[in-house]
Length: 121
Image (tube, one colour):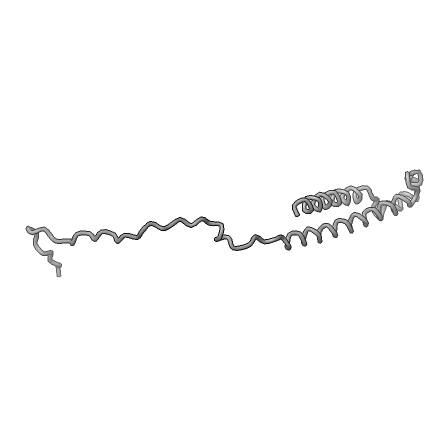
């Protein structure tokens, strides 16, 4: 189960980094106006609109992979096998020492030469 978790987390991180890179490579909606005035987009590797379609589709594929790995991580986190028994079963219990009654303190007796105390009125 641990190898599957490592695989899904690795794929998740790669998909996230890929999405970040592809989004940063894409032109914004306002970039089309600059292409009309000769910004050189027609000389790109994919043609005038080929790069936009390729980057959009690649981003969509990576987004699907990202969502699927998110769901997979959720499933793996909530369906972990639980160990049998309780936590208290793993604690070693030591026998308690025999309980002994505490020694009674000697009775408090006033000294023989003292007078009873008087309470002032």
